[in-house]
Image (tube, rainbow, N blue to C red; front, top):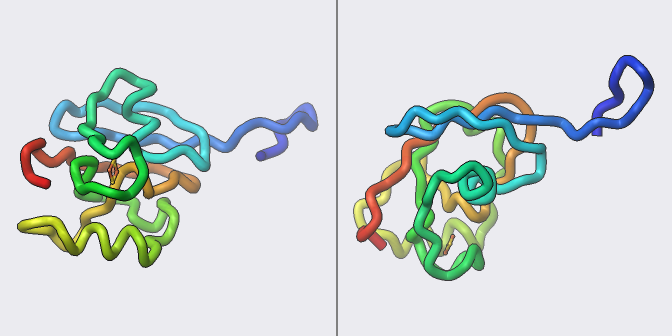
Length: 112
Ligand code: FES
C-alpha cells in the first residue's frame, strides 16, 4: 500500500497494456496478469483455472518484465512443456504485477 497526501493507504496500481487488442487497464499490485485481464473483459484462455497446470494462459512480455514477480521454478517447468516457447513468455496466472507498466501480447489459443 502507498500513502496518499492525506495520509491514507491506497493500493499501488500498475498499468497493463494487452496486445494485439491494444487495451490498457489499471490493476492493483499483487494481481496476476490473468486476473487483471479477466477483470477487464479481456479473455485469456486458462484451462486449469490458474493452477499452473497447463500453458493456455501464456503471454509474451513485450515491455516491463522487471515490473512482474520473478519467475518461479514451478512456472518455469510448466513453460518448458509448451511448444514453440519464446524467450519472454510467462504464464499470466503466475505473473504478479508489482509496480509500473507492463505490455504483453496474447498468444493465440490452441497452442498448449
Ligand atoms: S491457467 Fe493453466 S497455467 Fe495458467
